[in-house]
Structure formats: C-alpha cells, structure tokens
Image (cartoon, rainbow, N blue to C red; front, side):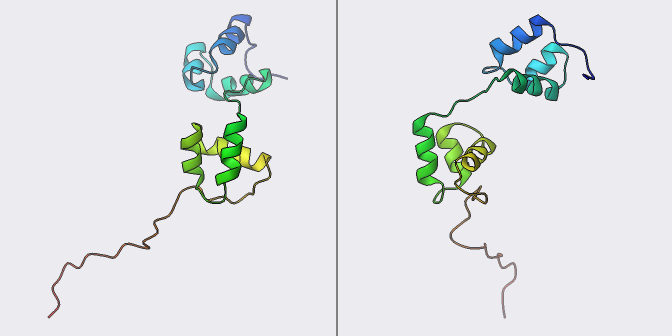
Length: 116
C-alpha cells in the first residue's frame, strides 16, 4: 500500500516530458515531492536517463583494465556510478580502479629546518 499521495496524470506527464533534461531534485521541488519519490516513479515508469551506444560499450570494454572509471566516465559523458554499474552488467569485474594514482609515489615532506 502506498504511503504518500497518489500521482496525478499531470505530474506523470511532467516527469515523462522532462526526465532527460531536468534533474530529479528540480522536478521534486517543482512537484512538491521528495527526490526519492521522483526517482522511484521514473524507475517504475521505465524511464532511463541514458542509453548506452555500441561505441560507448566498446570504449568501456577496451579501457576497463587500463583506465580508471573516472576517466572512462568523462570520455563517455556519464557518472562514475553509471560506468561501474554497466561494467558489472557486462561482467567486466567488480573491483575497478575508480581514480588514478600518482605514479611518482608519495610526496616527500618539505624540510623546514637546515641540518647542521
């Protein structure tokens, strides 16, 4: 049984027309509903913000082991979480590098005193 108020036809139309261009938080403010309420309604309506192209999937497969997810997400134009979830669904692995590490190693502390 639903806890909140029922969705009006106009609210559903608003979400359906705007889910790709307006963030959930803004739609929630406009409709007087919570972020989670709007996000869940989009899921239940089957509305996806992004469809993966064959080119994007190939880029992910080609660079999954070599690049951090942050770099892949910038190239594709979606969030790190989106890339991570897609990599799981493609069976690429479960423990990817999210951010790259510096290759030069840890930074050395600056010496603030002069040795005698």
